[in-house]
Image 1 (cartoon, helix red, strand yellow):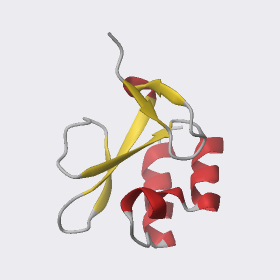
Image 2 (image 1 turned 180 degrees about the vertical axis):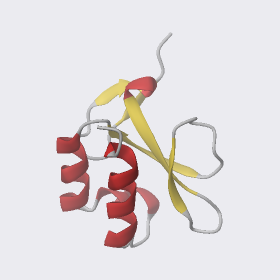
Image 3 (image 1 turned 135 degrees about the vertical axis):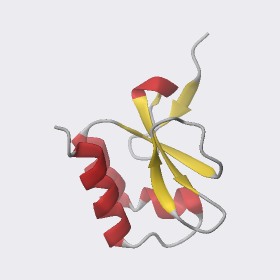
Image 4 (image 1 turned 120 degrees about the vertical axis):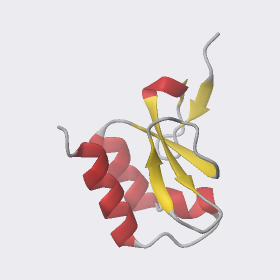
Length: 85
Protein backbone atom coordinates (compact mmCIF):
# COMPACT_ATOMS: atom_id res chain seq x y z
CA UNK A 1 0.00 0.00 0.00
CA UNK A 2 1.46 3.35 -0.96
CA UNK A 3 1.38 6.26 1.45
CA UNK A 4 0.26 9.48 -0.24
CA UNK A 5 1.40 12.96 0.74
CA UNK A 6 0.61 16.31 -0.87
CA UNK A 7 3.29 18.63 -2.24
CA UNK A 8 2.89 22.05 -0.59
CA UNK A 9 3.85 23.78 -3.86
CA UNK A 10 1.92 22.05 -6.67
CA UNK A 11 -0.73 20.48 -4.39
CA UNK A 12 -0.48 17.07 -6.13
CA UNK A 13 -0.75 13.90 -4.07
CA UNK A 14 2.15 11.55 -4.66
CA UNK A 15 3.75 8.54 -3.02
CA UNK A 16 5.68 9.62 0.07
CA UNK A 17 8.93 8.24 -1.38
CA UNK A 18 8.69 10.56 -4.41
CA UNK A 19 8.67 13.68 -2.22
CA UNK A 20 11.17 15.36 0.09
CA UNK A 21 10.13 16.06 3.68
CA UNK A 22 11.05 19.38 5.23
CA UNK A 23 10.64 19.40 8.98
CA UNK A 24 10.36 22.07 11.66
CA UNK A 25 11.33 20.75 15.09
CA UNK A 26 10.29 21.98 18.54
CA UNK A 27 13.15 24.49 18.65
CA UNK A 28 12.05 26.04 15.35
CA UNK A 29 14.97 24.56 13.39
CA UNK A 30 13.96 23.83 9.77
CA UNK A 31 15.81 21.12 7.85
CA UNK A 32 15.49 18.50 5.13
CA UNK A 33 14.50 15.10 6.48
CA UNK A 34 15.72 12.45 4.04
CA UNK A 35 14.83 9.63 6.46
CA UNK A 36 11.23 10.80 6.94
CA UNK A 37 11.52 10.01 10.64
CA UNK A 38 12.62 13.24 12.33
CA UNK A 39 10.32 14.58 15.02
CA UNK A 40 8.42 17.74 14.24
CA UNK A 41 5.97 19.25 11.79
CA UNK A 42 6.58 18.04 8.25
CA UNK A 43 5.85 19.52 4.84
CA UNK A 44 6.44 17.69 1.58
CA UNK A 45 7.70 19.03 -1.74
CA UNK A 46 8.41 17.37 -5.09
CA UNK A 47 12.06 16.63 -5.86
CA UNK A 48 12.18 18.90 -8.91
CA UNK A 49 13.53 22.43 -9.20
CA UNK A 50 10.31 23.79 -10.70
CA UNK A 51 8.25 22.82 -7.65
CA UNK A 52 10.86 24.22 -5.30
CA UNK A 53 10.79 27.55 -7.16
CA UNK A 54 7.00 27.55 -6.81
CA UNK A 55 7.38 26.84 -3.09
CA UNK A 56 9.64 29.91 -2.75
CA UNK A 57 7.37 32.17 -4.80
CA UNK A 58 4.15 31.18 -2.99
CA UNK A 59 5.84 31.08 0.43
CA UNK A 60 4.29 27.64 0.94
CA UNK A 61 6.47 26.81 3.96
CA UNK A 62 5.15 29.86 5.81
CA UNK A 63 1.64 28.46 5.43
CA UNK A 64 2.63 24.87 6.23
CA UNK A 65 4.54 25.77 9.40
CA UNK A 66 2.41 28.73 10.49
CA UNK A 67 5.43 30.99 10.79
CA UNK A 68 7.63 33.22 8.67
CA UNK A 69 10.44 31.14 7.16
CA UNK A 70 13.36 33.43 6.25
CA UNK A 71 14.65 33.39 2.67
CA UNK A 72 18.13 32.39 3.91
CA UNK A 73 16.72 29.12 5.28
CA UNK A 74 14.78 28.39 2.09
CA UNK A 75 17.90 29.11 0.00
CA UNK A 76 20.02 26.80 2.16
CA UNK A 77 17.39 24.04 1.87
CA UNK A 78 17.42 24.47 -1.91
CA UNK A 79 21.21 24.33 -2.00
CA UNK A 80 21.25 21.16 0.15
CA UNK A 81 18.54 19.48 -1.92
CA UNK A 82 19.99 20.18 -5.36
CA UNK A 83 23.74 20.12 -4.64
CA UNK A 84 24.13 16.56 -5.95
CA UNK A 85 22.59 17.50 -9.33
